[in-house]
Length: 592
Image (cartoon, rainbow, N blue to C red):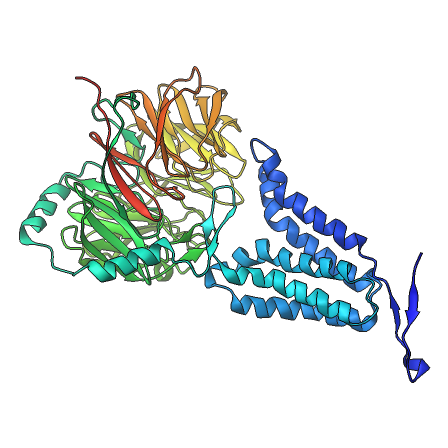
């Protein structure tokens, strides 16, 4: 039964009628927030629609809570206005207090609902207080909800979009690494004998760039033993590194990768035997997004005596591998006339002949760009999709060298010398693509696509000077997000969301599905018939590369922290890194 009270007033015409607030709609919406946020955890394979809803859905509930307050709360007119604008003002004040890493969606989606829920709970707790005090108390709880984010910082999200929060006053791994380097490093020029050694090594790099020479993530060296129980991998070294999702380029005793170091996006050379830093060079540039955090996404490329690197904000550079000196640089933002995409420029440079090729996604013919490797001048450009985190890939199709570029529009096949389009195969992805195509034989291509779309195999044929593409099958049994697959003996092995999967290349049907490794990366140990997985939490896992069943052989914890970087195996050495540390392990070999 409703309760109505009239407070004493000098002028009856100005009397205020206070009523107990109707709060059950607000509480129902707060409960719905919680259900929506936690709902993906109820499923073994998290449906994409629920993952997206769990991020943006609670904000929709916030809108309805504000509508409730204005229309159905029984608050007085002045209370409604003060409460509504008070929530907005407290939100603005709170955003001014938070760490920069919490701004944007990093604050709005997870933390915004905390403030609105605080307001709804405050209104409920004090609903019987028939005075303006209940509105002020509700606003206080709203401010505490919004302000909770002032105590934390965001280091990015996991592969399933869960924020990785840390106390704001604790130093990040990057800050600890930089403080240690500042205290211990004395910058010295690279010694003459080391310069000669690096120059000799880079003439014939064993692993010249992203996913190897052919970008298939295949190790074709000596056989690796899977018996790690009696002969476990031996740690050679482990070092702190700056943030970034780059992998390694390897030449002899030298490793090349990219890191964020404070305001500098840096290319670094390490000694492969010890992890000792030889040189670090870069540009003043820092990119951050709430999903990936700070740092570069591309992997440097060794070719034609040079080291080519792509920064996240747009700098394409050629460096001298022996010293790190920048020979030339180009700004893709100016050349392609565009801002960095949502998660930054991520294209690992491809060097073929006398050009270095990257994807920029500019309008018109400024999609894929080729620069002269000696001068840095633009040699050709080609139309392309406007959104891609994939890298150009050189392959042979029907006996002809071709550059493959997978984008949100589909796949383009380009002449490597001129950039002339040989095929534009349309398969639109409304979001993005960030994985590599896989060539099967020399006449078909596998197009993996994330965000719940699936994978398609197309057959290529020749029509005059052009290629034509025909769909062979499309399968939703392999839906990688940003996790590349490998091809072995008629099957593809990769991540279906966060569960590892094997599919038949003839039909696209699933052979098996099993193994939860987060959003990790896989490397094929071809000689051994094994799959080496760098799991999202830093474990290294060995699987048998067989379509018969998911067979996990062994695993060990290699590094700590979120690991999205591609692992590299050269001979018996495993190189693995993430956004905070890198390590080298000696893997046990089979008896010759």
